Length: 523
Ligand SMILES: [Zn+2]
Image (cartoon, rainbow, N blue to C red; front, side, top):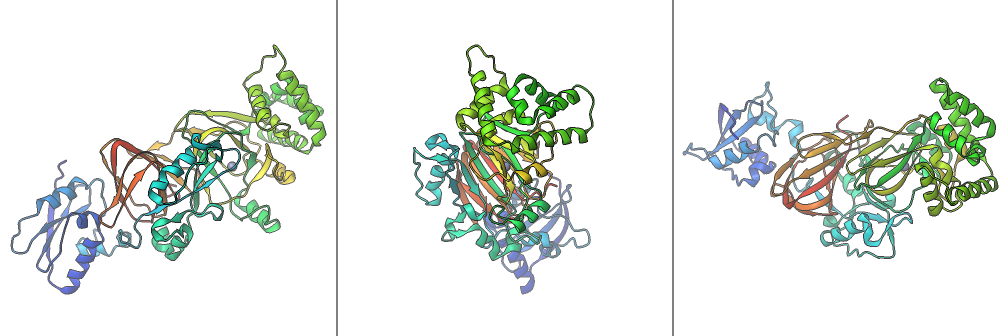
């Protein structure tokens, strides 16, 4: 690559104060430092302006005035990646650039990347033993993190948690297994950036799903605060919990949001047991309304009334009608549609559970690898199968509706749901560059980048003014922050990256795929 440069000025290092400033600058800058620059008195910098407005440096030894071209070349060669010297027109000299706040946080031993050892959750719905990506990631990472983890082939492995949630804290093997939370709190401004944050705002997970999870919804922030204040044992924190799911496999299925009135009406016309669930009078009104025009408010009221009826029915009535429905669906010669097929699947996974009727209420989504969707506050959802990345605001507030033996807070649930109809939008992310896709939800708490780097490439992971975590999904490579820090990265390896620090990613022979979750700096 050729970049035209215009020489602006030459600065000779004479005074001790200047020398120290320049030395700090070089020591704290991974590119210059890793290129072997040793400063001494009488050395020269040339400052150049490039066409992109960045300023680059040329280095000369005392009395020689012959540029050390390898330094210029390597710097210029990566100038497009390392646009770290935004030109200050009011202070175009090197010293003012060094003093810019954005440049203060270069990489030192205080804020270099940290390997993480993450928690695997063995919930009963997880894929079992080596069939679970969660288990295989944990086992592969144990070669690096020293955890000694071995897969128990009879145990389910449902979730891998990367973050600071107290129920599954990530720890730093390089710091005597200090918790990630304590590490971040040891210097919040350094690790979290210029904001007032003192913790990682998100929880990043891998889910390996064998059996449908409970149908649930998460309260918005105001409701979460109220619920937590009134009932802290059921609602553990005052935070909201928006979520995003990115499919890692082609068999990811989920339920999310209410079906249209027409679709629900057609299930009511087909199944008398479902009519009992939503109420006979409600069903009549539904069928009439669905065949004419109606307002969103009418749709909302109708869905809330029907869902309230269903959620309030005694278990005995649900059980009788469930048996009747399943008897017919299982009878010889009965032709089931794909909604009935899901009902049957749920009946095998959660025998006798009232939530088996859910597919008649909710959209059934099927996603392929790389597809993603966002679940906002108060939207009912349940994951059915497949393996996913999931990112969410750091919270544990769940209001359950079915497919679970756990508490169902029915009045709260019925009141809080949005009753919007239709599936959430499915996205494949937006391209940040030719190797990186960004998934960014409409909330400030989190965003996810997925970097897919071909074999033997060098890729610059830019700095963001927020904390982030890396998780290797495939392949191998090295992540390097100059000579300050380098991590051998392979399947399952996770690392914490402090705010405003960048890194170079060297992909191995088979390339490398890394997901990076961060506070949503892309809003
Ligand atoms: Zn959820």
